[in-house]
Image (cartoon, rainbow, N blue to C red):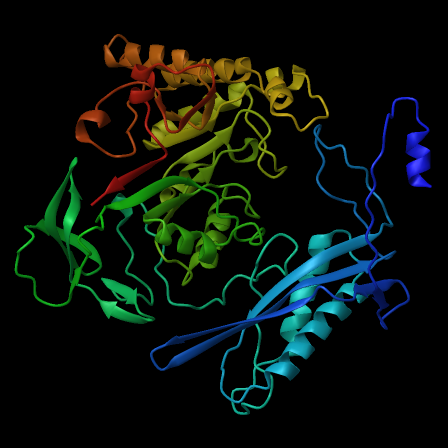
Length: 515
């Protein structure tokens, strides 16, 4: 019937259809939920490490469907949103779930697998949710509740911990809190806190913790060269970079001859969304990923967490959420919004490294942008503190007047974010910096045309024509660069227009390396 329908249309010259039929089993929880028969695979991984054995179990290809009892409404909307809300829809998903057994000995794996699968299926059928993510969250919680950990009775079902496999899988919870990590470090003028629950100079090797007193390698980056050297560690810090054959007391980690030993990366632009939106990114996952990528220090942006870091109280909540959860050092930016103008000094005194503001909507309602007069007021206030303001520089008026076609095409997206939005905003930032003498960084440029404005401001300041144009520190901290005056671009990503090499070389990334 479908083939005849489409073949009858005047613009169709031919048709080809393919259909598949699957058997479905109605779930007992209600009359409108089903599980597809066949296609599901049970999975297992077993790993041994010394005397320890780890068992990961799971399933894939579990296809679930319900014909009613699911909504999709109440989601954030903007001018790009084309999806209509609905209070009733057909919901189907293919589930991949993985869980780790807390103890392998004495476990009835068949019974445990059946209990977890039953919990997943039952939670899917019974959960009336407004989005698939809510259903998946309920399924993960049900799987955990179905198998509570029983330390004294190894024959009870151990507690599973769902792990993600792909979109549509049971969403992971953040790793358990209370794991010993390092506390965040603050501004040098406030002193560096003592590590909490972390052995200075300790590294995890082969599943254990080994105290490392030095790292020796044939290719150690010292300055701009790879040379044989020994990096000496004392109390968790790099104490010296010594010759390769230097005598070092204690444990020396010898890097393979083909490995590079590099300074840790300092990433100054990271959004850790805890507390409030930890499911986006929490301190555990963010800092663990940073450590695995060679980032030893990150600075957390003030928005996307709830509440945003715009008050001393919110900063305290950030620190409380981070305490004991960190794999690397963490600092914090403070936020500037219309409501906290005139009250930035307490945040500075509490230890934020600087302040961030937007000149256009940030994407979250709790972090509104600054109007031109408010930007000047903020820069005046921060200049009196000797602080730094980093700016998301897009002109709100230009964006509001730009076309916003309901399309996912990249060319249409560029129409909605014209070059003028950035050039106008950067000119505003430069003018306010001249007027107030505040140090300013322009963040994540996407238009190469704005680099001309930045270059002109830097040239003016570097020539010494205007003593009030602020001196801005370059993130990698070279003393000569710190004395330069001008507006410094943290992360130039010129997707439109061709940046000149001189300009690209004059900008600096939002990360740096250090010993």
